Image 1 (cartoon, rainbow, N blue to C red):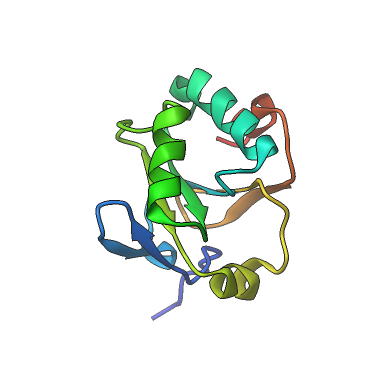
Image 2 (spheres, rainbow, N blue to C red; image 1 turned 60 degrees about the vertical axis):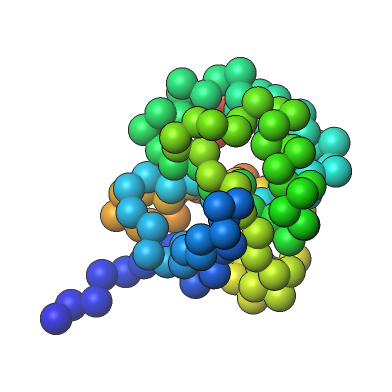
Length: 135
């Protein structure tokens, strides 16, 4: 059988509901957002995403950090991103991020097509309207 190319990283993510997913198995249009809850660039980007959440309705957004669950929860609530069906928050190890992406800036956004191809990598703070082009 022909192995379908899968650009999604092989990362175990612990979601806020304590369930564990592997990003390699995600389906549909996926946006991985690597951030740190205390990074001001990440906070600005999160604010813009929340204000434009309908533009992302065709995708599932995964906010991923190596930070603690309580900081993640505070961030999700403060930036009004909690409670959207297509926005999930989770944590993974710093090692896992380095292994898959190298030393990336936060925020970094990776957009994948429904057939698991990397469409676009946006490292560092970008205007969220930039991201729409790839959704």
